[in-house]
Amino acid sequence: MSREERNKEIAHLYKSGVKTSEIAKKFGLSDRGVTLILNKLGVTMRPTGYRKYELNESFFREWSNEMAWVLGLVVTDGCVDPNNQSVSISQKDPYLLEKIKKLMNYSGPLNKSRNQELYSLIINSKVIKSDLNKLGVTARKSLTIKFPSCPATYLPHFVRGVIDGDGHVDQQGYMVTVTSGSIFFSEGLLSVLQTWGLRSKIHTVKSNNKIPIYRIIVSGKESVKSLSEIIYINGDDNCVLSKRDKMMRYPYINPETKRVKFRTTISSTVLERLNIIAMENKTFTNYLLETGIKHILANPGISFGKKKQSDRILYKTSYNRDLLEKAKIFAKLNSIHLSDLLEYAADFIDINKAIIEGDRQRKV
Image (cartoon, rainbow, N blue to C red):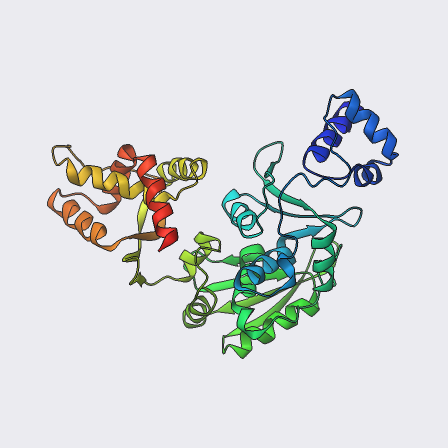
């Protein structure tokens, strides 16, 4: 790293709320040296004792559904910095990090990596770090962390966070795998899964440098289905939605929202475009598609033909039950597949309506 790059990083960390003393330790400088660099770059200095961003520092002091879920994410996917008071979580999808920010009442920004493929939530708080230490989450935890003493009431939410952080769900939803470097944590998680009556085991492999890696596996469609019913109850949308969709393979109707799970195919190119639009506007892809479907149903004069997409992939999400049934009938009457209709709908989306629908569903 050049001096110029170092100085830019120092400015970035300071603007993110990191103390000058912590920055000094990171770069082997004195506090005064860091201050001089910041002054040279024209960075406005904070008053002593000032917290730049709002934060609920008591978040990890009392168990709740939300606290247990975030703890599961921190345990598996978080990083406690040994040299300062920061705790960070990194994800490719900023949706999850925005959820955590909201739950912790944190007003700071997310940080993008230089290639913009990774987002990080960095929280600087001596109190948060101390409380996590008390829960067993320490620096360099990956090989030694133990399964926390979590009240049984909150175990489903903690396990959901663990799966969201370091879990993998196969495409068909018949196997869930959590990877860990700690045998203590792995055995604790396995014990919980077996207590729930799930078909589960630990499979050990060796990494390239001969360090054992433990894979806690839940297999079989009935066990995975049972697991999904346990961990997603009362979980709202505090989860990685794609993992939830894969695990809950069967059509699922929420009687309050009248939404139904449904799986079909769609062009991966079209889906990627919609995902980007949804992410940029803080809404969801299925709500975008629904606005397009409604437009088509309201304008029967649009001409259709079967599309011959070569990049279609499975896509499972939730739709308004009544709208989905109307869409099926419409597709049949026009001699096209539902996949064709979805791809046409992508050209008639209404972003504002999708945002409104997303907000409405969150309140239901």
